[in-house]
Length: 431
Image: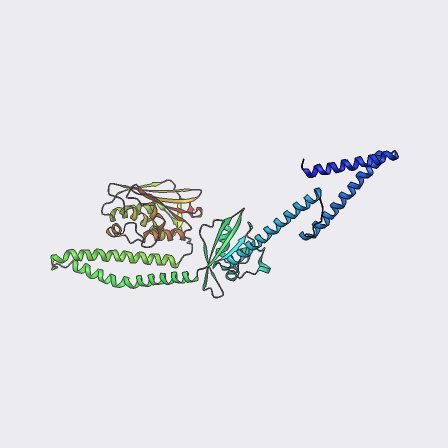
């Protein structure tokens, strides 16, 4: 027991003893002892009342002057009050810093609860999305940002990739919206103005499309004259080798231009395709024959069909994508190697994999393989006639069909390219 409580117990005992002694003079010791204890209780109740009045004022300078246990209680409450005031001031400073820092962020930030209702947003988000603090807090974000692309993006629940929307009255502003999960189901919406980037991307696409279109005609003329000269009987044998190399390079340039035009068409029409029922087995049989006929050292190509189902797709686009994968595998697989092509369907959709046991690809190159003109080995690609656009075309074809391209490779052991189509693309085989 602490000294304070010992002092309290001693005081109570002393007062009770004094009351009993005084009461003994009048023949009523118990009554006088009870009266003495009642006086102590009245004093303690008075201290309790003073403490209550002080706590209601919430003023540290109005603390009652008390001793003993009550003085100890007043001291502890005062310390807790000072600690609360310190943490309150510290929290206010942090909140001011947070408000200043979020106001300085060049991107918009919106905090959403699990029901996608707005909890808070910074100034940039208010400017980009035309939000108002007085009326929009507590409303669902898709009631304020009503573009169908964003509504579908929010409802999908998978936020790995951002969505780009047209904004503004003229539709010339582009906003990139990206949702990140945090906490217990809360959502963080990041908004960025990407108008400049989109304008540059549009200019690049238009330039590539126009340049490719303008180069095709003169290159066709050059290739025609080269073929005519190569067939000339009076041609000097010394020129036969250079002419053959010029013809080969002309064919390679024609292939690059055709790939650029195909990629430009895919980028110009980025919407989903409806398509028709494509017999994948028949298509792959045809592509197998074409690949073996084109390759100078054709490897073995094995086809495996684990499902009779067909694919609802644009026949020309999927033929281009599958042909690029087979051609790519044939270029990087030695004549003694083999290519395995498998087609199957399951609850996740339809899948086509092209697996080879060629030279493989190092892990650091995998994230960039679908970039335009990206080559793991530029020298080998030029030797095999690669344009560096094949996988970019495959990626865009898969995006048009709502699917994805997965790449797995081990250097020195081979690579596997898998096209994954959504379940709605699967259709039953014709009778």
